[in-house]
Length: 466
Image (cartoon, rainbow, N blue to C red; front, side, top):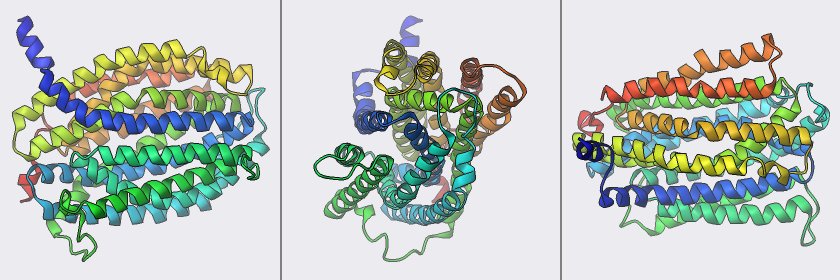
């Protein structure tokens, strides 16, 4: 009995070596990126709470765009992974062409909407209710930061089109290297431009935005040049722009499978933004505290996020190769692995909670709130790890309607209404409000387990199209 359970839920050394070869480079890249973002955040936090809040608000708006791009590319990425598993390079090219079209559409729409409606969008997060913060100053800093950050969306979309494709085919080293170079450039320029070092003017939040845009351009150039020089290893990266004649079957299937993911990521990220709006109803101190919490949370979350990507890549390729039983077994073992590892990571995060907020030049009110938020997220990390792994398990087989219902539909029907009711109809303090809204993730875990257990996600999409 014990041996059977061990074989069912745990792999051998070769299995974990395979998983880690895919996941670790993603962890390193994301970890490096988030550690640098943490340092960037600390730098902005050294020039004032209003500046930090302004940047945090803009980044919350950008978060919706980033996740929409991720969702748009993820729908196509399901087919890239499965076509790669079936060694169909020509159809991989067709899917990449679809990614570029999706990227351009999202880019034009995203820049247009954010630029035109920037002031009312920023105002969603500006509320009295705490002793911390100047609303007018925060608005001014947010608009200054946003004006520059919009430029960086262009190289971001282009590089994501390339790097997402590389990851889906198992190449995680190059995106990792490009990401590391980019964040080093970002960190260096942040220090120089925010504080006015090496003879440069002191630019504050504008300097932070300029540094981010330049780093994204660097990352984009590295990836494109590398792909051009490695045509033998990745033949599907060449001849993409010779024509845009995409077979109708590809367009139909990518739209059918991909649109729910795009809508899902947009609505899910919008739900996170709406929750932040609910918390901001208790004052700017809540916005600043959540910004500090999210900065640290992003660093610790890299583990289960990488395992989600690993599931999408490994399970997607196994499904595309027709190895359905192996795909099911691998997905189950990776979900268990992700949860167990995150128990350890969550403990480390909880230990860090009382100390990290003290690194910011802000008020005691903000530090107190940030500490409580961090502890809450640390307790919920194993639950979030399982839900994330379940989401990517369902997605690997193309069950995008189910992932939509599981993710964003649940958020807007259950989580957001809870936040709005607590914010507008009660006087409950922001910490218990945050605990209730984030704690609903535990209910979602039950739904995730049932959906994965039914095995409805197991299908070979490459075979269906061909």
